[in-house]
Each structure stands twice: as structure tokens, then as C-alpha cells.
Length: 246
Image (cartoon, rainbow, N blue to C red; front, side):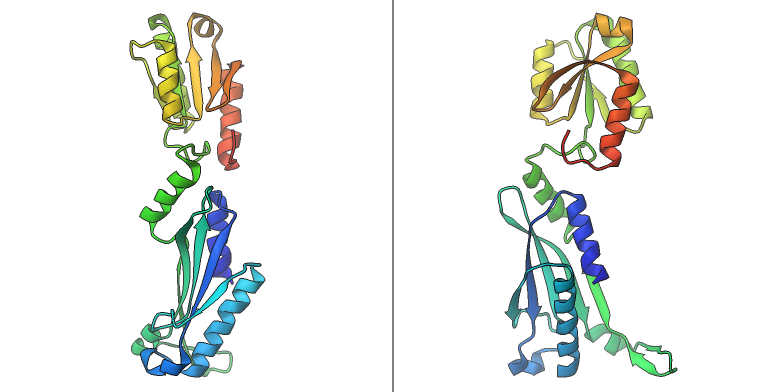
């Protein structure tokens, strides 16, 4: 059960809340295809069913789909559009411990065979990150965003202040960039929105003189001027709590 709980904790941390779960079982009519014996398979399948039911997960049984070395739980994440993505697996393995003749001593000093449990808490990392991009349509929550904030100076006169603000963000541990190109501020904002950057920090002569920043949130528009220290605390809170929304 601990392996299933770990998988669910990881998925929910990344914002997944709906799952499709398959329990792959052996085919008793073809015992020669599988490692282990009937008693071992029945024990393993009961254990996986118990773990799924204790975790509150509904599942479907798929006879004959188990690997030759043990039954398996497959958890598929459902993204924001309801599409299923292969994710974590919890897999019994009767074969390898038997081949290596691995045992442990129980409380009565008797040798007991070891059963191995493989678990992949996110599945294939490449596929998992691909599913994340689809799930959020690229608009990641602050803690996951590749670039968390971009500083946008309105004029060349504010460039030095903008650079110092970017540096302050970096020193605070945020992934921040500076867009000091000779472009109109509207074009810079549009590009930042296209790149799904959560925070757009706009600075001009007034902000530079007052040590403030004008905040614009992705897909929410302007929020107005804000103290830089208060902004950093806000961002730190959102990031540390792994909040899903700005």
C-alpha cells in the first residue's frame, strides 16, 4: 500500500486528481507462462487488490495481462481533456529473487523467500513531462514554470533598475529573465503571454524612482503597482505551497 500511496502523492502533487487504474492478472489456465506458483500468485493479487481498495481507487481487472514474473497495478493519469496517460506502476516480481535465491530470517529465525516489488512513481519521465505539458496546455503553476517571472522595462532609462530587479529575483531562488529588447512594451507582454510566463513585472521611470514594480499576471491582466519585497513573499508562498493557480 505504501508504494501505491507514494504514486498517488506524486501525481496529486503535480495536479492530477483523476485516474484510470488497471490490475493485470495471470491466466491460471496457462501456468507454464509464469514464474512462481499458484499460491504465490493468489497472495500477490490479493495484496494488490487490498492496496487499491485501501487507497480508495476503483480499478478494472485484466486477466492474462500480467508479466510472466508477477501481477501489476497500472495507474493512468487523466489530463484536463480527459485523456489517459500511462503513469506509475507497482509490479510484483517472483522471478528475480528466486533466481538469486534471496531469503530473509523471520522472528523465528526461519528462512522466508523474498518477494520483490518494483515501483515507478511517475512512469517514464519523458512521457510524464509530455503529459504535464498537455495537462496544463503549457500554462504551468508558478512552482513548475520553467520561467517564473520576466522583467519588462518600458524605457531604456529603466533598464538598470529592471536588471537589478531580475538579479534580486534570481538571488531569491526564482527562475527569472530580463527582456530589455528595443521593443514596445505591448509586444513584450504579448510574447510573455504566448510563453505562458506566470509573472510579468513591468518597470518604467515611476517604478524605478519609487523602487516598486507594476505586476501583470498571466491570463489575468494588470494588477497594478506593488512593493518588491511583498511580491517576493507572495511568489515564495505560492511556490512553496505548490499552489495550482496564481
